[in-house]
Image (cartoon, rainbow, N blue to C red; front, side, top):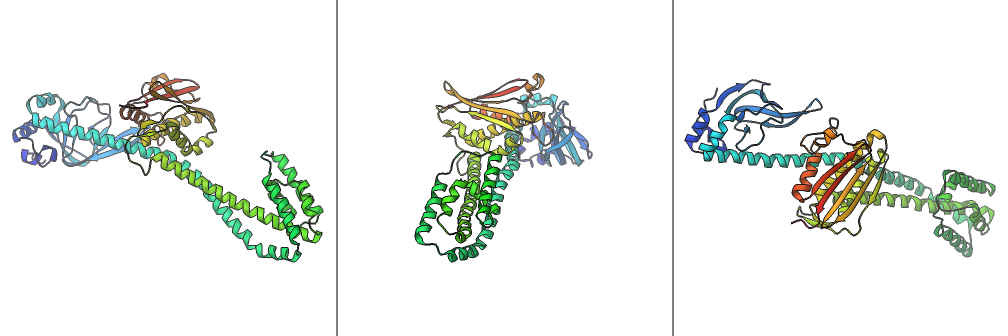
Length: 468
């Protein structure tokens, strides 16, 4: 076992300004021992025995969730852990076991009061350790929760981006193949030798039909019937590839009564090349239009992602509309909403002014609350999510309601506790609602309340419009 001296302890940065006599008191009043591999330095739900100084070796810190170990950190040589002056915690919240052989020096918790009364510099140094621990733990929790929030969105975003991306690839490939056939189609059209007046008339009639397409959506049966009618018309007039062209003509608003006036502008031998030319123009336009819409969908998603994460902006408070953040969150969770057959009802107060807020932090709040609501409604196979904003004097009130099974009374009192979760392993850290409360209460001087009964759970977030 390594012999500990004041000089050795001063090699620990936080203790290098502590007088030798105080360090000697610490050595004399501490317990010195060796932990073998796997032995516990402390265990969850057991009393904290004292302030632990790791002389050499390492101790692994972890907690269990759903019977599965979740490692948090590893403390090594010269680390200080356990009870610290002015700590309120008396019971360990997690586990610490030795990795290999570890030498430990422990100041028993019952001697800490003597430390505080008699040794100011040593107490001050250990209080600094506690402050650093709180700061580091808070930063770690925030980072972990942000990563968890990102993880919640990643699968849905991949799906949302994949659909329009696949559409672009598919339509670009089809358009390329389609354009390869254009020389042959053009040659047939040139051979017809229509005069300029007839060409102008045909173009005018086609343009009129396209511009005056009805906005009324056809049922599947109506659509199929109309395609059959147009295909039959093409067949009756000896138009080649009529059944292949019928779908596109219907999509562009054509009916059989539109085809006769066009047909009358040409000879029967010209009909196939001319209708093929009309079809090619409409099909090319359709594929380009599909590519445009898919590209716009990707652009909109990227805009939502940038707004959601508050990229390209500082971390300072800014005036912003709360409904914009909620809408972007719903876009981010769009795939999960669709997969859960959830109907979303949005009721935003248009008179609610912009709020001075940390935009990215509040987006994290909306993500956690909405994602929790979606998880709660999973058991029903469908659900209704209602989001409402309103002004209550100098506060903005945001109410998020779901029709899931509700939160049991014995659970409701603990949902804001750190690491408490009712979700399965891998679905939650137990930090989501704790982070929600911290962001709303500490960073925005607001409040979070929950009302729950079977079939209705509502979270009410109240934030001052102009925080002090």
